[in-house]
Length: 180
Image (cartoon, rainbow, N blue to C red; front, side, top):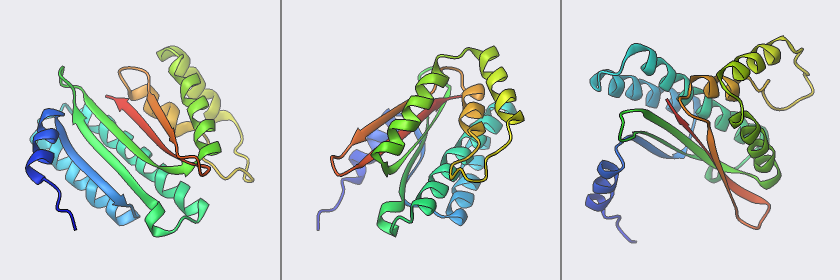
C-alpha cells in the first residue's frame, strides 16, 4: 500500500492557506465535531464575529445539503464521502468549499441554479430570498426550499462558484465554493 507524502500534503495545505480539511463519509455527529473544530480555528484566527458566523453557517448548509442528498439517494457508505475545505485567500477572506458525488442530472440542475444565482446582485439576492421564503413548500419535492443556496450567496463577498466533473457513468463530482 502506498503511503501518502504527508510533508508534501502539509506544504500544499500551507501554500493554499487551508485551515481545515476533511475527506470521507460524513454523518450528523461528524458535521457537529468538525463544526466545533471550525469554531475553534476561527476563534484562534481572531475572525470577526460576523465573519465567523457566516463561515460557520456556510459550512453547516453545505455539509447538511450533502448529508441529506446522499441519504435521499440511498448511497452506500463509500459513496457518501464529502470533501470539505476551509481556507483563506491572499486578502484574508475565508473560502468555504464542499463537494460530493452526485447523479449527473442532479448536478447539472444545481449548476444551473447556482449560475442563475451568481448573476444576482445583493439587492436581487435579498428579494429572491424573501420571495422563496414566502412560497409554500411543496411536500412532494425531495429537495430543500432553495433558501440555503440563496442564504450562502447573500453572505458571500463574491458570486458562488460551482464545478461539475462528470464521470461518464451518470455520476459526477459536484463542488461549491463561497468566499466570505
